[in-house]
Length: 165
Image 1 (spheres, rainbow, N blue to C red):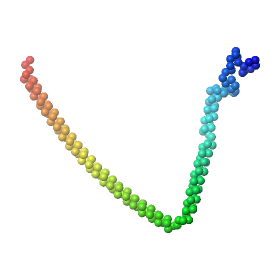
Image 2: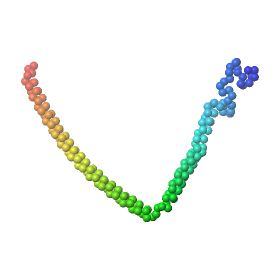
Image 3: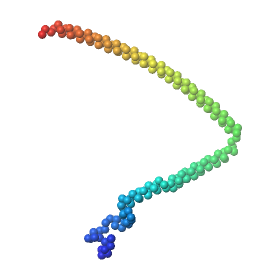
Image 4: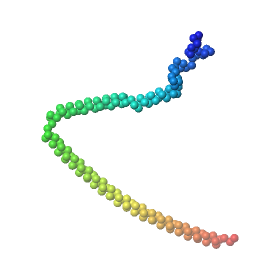
């Protein structure tokens, strides 16, 4: 305490937190300007430092290359047992299977079209039936309104007979 330097406590107080921090031209290490510069450095390294990405891509490329190399080696070892005749036979089988598949699709499409046409006819019949039912309901409503008008007209007449006031 007798040193009297910047680290000495004034009036017996302990030094302020971060008393050892270096001062630069922008202020202390904890100043807002210093923090902004630190954040800018981090952003710069994230945006422009591509080493982690390149390393990951390189590892992926090497892994894929090794897998394809093993696959090529296994195909090369099996190639000796294959010949052109077996390839042609396999191609013919695939072609027949393809045509059979196409025929099945055409049959299925024809079935779908027929089913769709049937649904259209059923829908049209349903709509005609609904229109007829609506006409019947409208007619019944019109008749009910007429009956009510007649009933109220009769009640008005009867009311006129009884009122002597």
